[in-house]
Length: 312
Ligand code: ZN
Image (cartoon, rainbow, N blue to C red; front, side, top):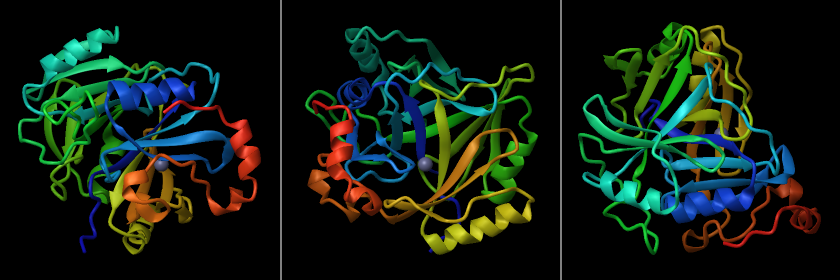
């Protein structure tokens, strides 16, 4: 079993309204809700996981929709863009689709020779759809109106905005096994060869960048993927050996996790493939039941009464 970091596992962001978030990601973007649970540290708030059919690591975007959360601001020391791979020649159809939902394209062009469009989710979270040069062979989740010819394949990359990239780059190269692949202006592309997809991290150097403020419409943390929890603990030793603080192993029910803040300010997590999202509901029912960690099961009624009612 490979003892490498296998690209991205998931990205977690903050929203201010559960229903609006659910509608956008499942109906507009066409992702599958693969798990509906609560914030393990705050069970009065949902935790939504969106991904492909199985919720394969590298496709998972998760949200804490804190009702009426104040607006955050993307900035230095944060992941400031999430980029999804889409099929070749699908961006035109996406532009038409997004226009139909009155969603404005905020940026478009080519980056490292790959065409992209950017826009925001209803909370202002910055999203990009990108046609990779090398075809992404992951099987997309299809919905009634987002079919495989345009459907997202999962993450292509995320962009971290930093005042200075050196120390963050060192974490990527010296601990996580990434290498610098290319540079375009102040954008530095790091890749891992351990995986065929979701293996790209862009570092954007903004020496005068204002620090971000972590609230609605911003990313909370970026999780990197490892195969299992014994490999997870080997990475814990590596992080500690670089003099960085890191949490003990935490059981997130669907994976095991470690968290540490990299020197540039971004909260990093390392998360395992095991046990995965089918641990507590069958594949065809993923996301359709409210799942609670066992410590909250005895309070299910109370929790259900408190959570916003959702139309799915
Ligand atoms: Zn996480």
